[in-house]
Image 1: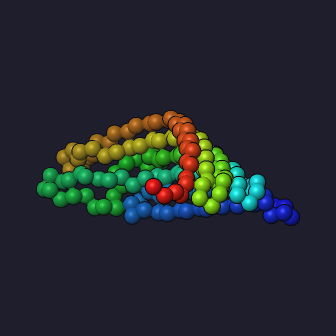
Image 2: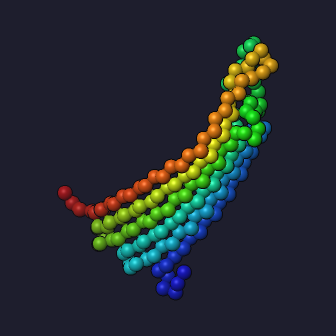
Image 3: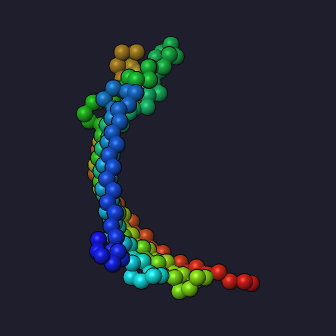
Length: 161
């Protein structure tokens, strides 16, 4: 980013989309991850990073439903309620890593990060077949968030004992 080449950047973007073997089931994942590294000297680096992930899915159902004659339903049959079963998750990670070499044999590393997730989850799930013609369907609806904090300090050295 500068003529001294001690301020570096990286920018990563990824996208993945997929369909399923079941009707109505699909998903996608979007990732954006920029980072900046500041080389404070020959032996010292400081890296700041951020990561954004958006995951959305209409997940496949896992039927374990059997007809009265013991035959299992075909694998591609979607037993949920289309449009009412999804997972929508946004996860953000923010942090830094610091590394300093005191000598060729000793160094210190420090990192800290915060991971924050917000989840919206609606789910329908199949129950038992009733008279080989109808199926009981259950449902749930969840909306929650989590925050996690991580920190670590390492002192690494090479010596004889």
